[in-house]
Image 1: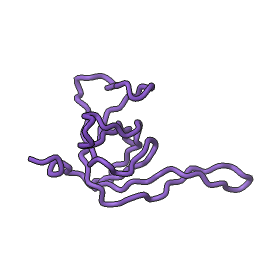
Image 2: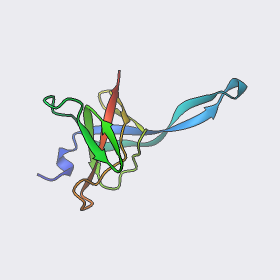
Image 3: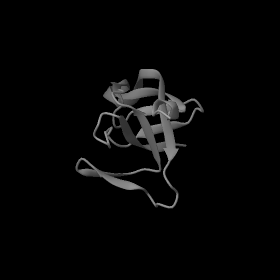
Length: 112
């Protein structure tokens, strides 16, 4: 089974932007980056409390992970919405965990 065949979710990716409203107050909005992006979103093993991993000098805690083909344009703080209309915020910078440009992983926080 190839890695691509395991990418069973489809997401749209949105990047945070800041606009300024009345009185100069900043307002956070999101701009669409890409749609129809294949990935695999997984809940982290429930036997682990607040899964954490050291990533480049900081630590994140996440209950969800997403796996993408290498080279997908996704960044920390992006918002993704999947085919089930679930919304997640990317909590970590994309990591090439196996170091062979095989795939990237990001930690997610689910928005309720």
